[in-house]
Length: 192
Length: 192
Image 1 (tube, helix red, strand yellow):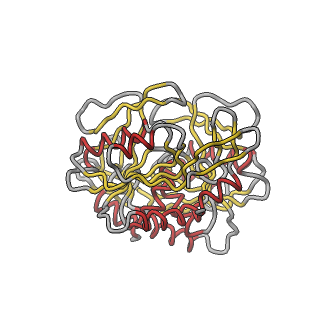
Image 2 (image 1 turned 180 degrees about the horizontal axis):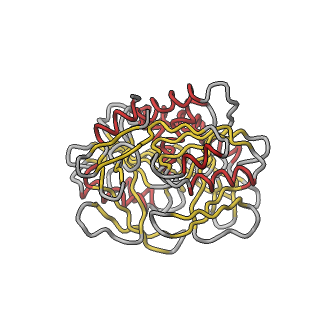
Image 3 (image 1 turned 60 degrees about the vertical axis):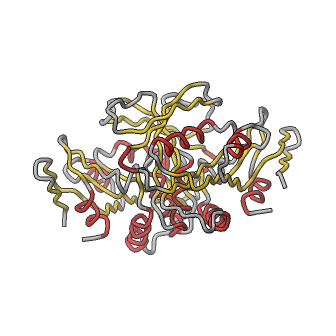
């Protein structure tokens, strides 16, 4: 069991509707020492991969991505969510449907900051249906850059995102894959 | 001249309307090695202050705050911007008027993550009119916590925010205070 799985068992809260609240250490209050331990784990898992840039999405991916970037010694670019599309051609854009908020956002990244020479590690806090992640992959692809790998903190293994992304051939490393949760007992079971 | 001032002269772009674009290293693409140098500078400037938590605001404050928090060895809490107010009493809220976007946002922080025992260092990327910062100070005050200090990356010295905050008695440390800018020549003059 790694540091993130241990922390989820200690401080995560399971709510009805398959919601796992980790806002005390991951995505509202952020334990950056934990992030640094997670960064070391990503370093191991992506050893030997050429990576020169990290891409994440606002807002809750930024903290993890920044600490991971410090360990990898590379800059971070964060994609912005917006409801209006910038049509001046200076931005890569991808549409992302949110199942949580039942709306469609555009995810944008300035063309200045990703190009064909980039080997990109995508970092995000959660993976469930994979919608946000597919948007980020689209943007890397529009830039002609390469997805060197994908590092997720918590994957909901009972939702389809992880399998879809792995079937596409990407190296997807989720530090905690939740197989099942029970709001009544508060139990969380991780994939071995 | 410190590392941030040097970087602004090298890669900052002055645009009409007193806009300083620093999106290549500060708030879209983020140079986390620069952030770590900035963090060391904050450590010096707030030496001897008791600090157990960093508070910032989404989205562009999160990267800097996370790297600074790693140096200070404390967690980060980031305030969320929202247009709807959560009325269930679980959140501290403050109204923040944005001069850039001409609208009013609510800034919210869960009551779970700041309390009377906290000595808070507030970190943000920009200070101009001080609206966002006043919102964060209000939230710390609602929590009965103490503002131990305020660390800003870039202060627009020709706008009133910095003076207002200093007049209130806070230790405000801005790593680069822009005295004047000229979009025609691209010149940036820093306060000594």
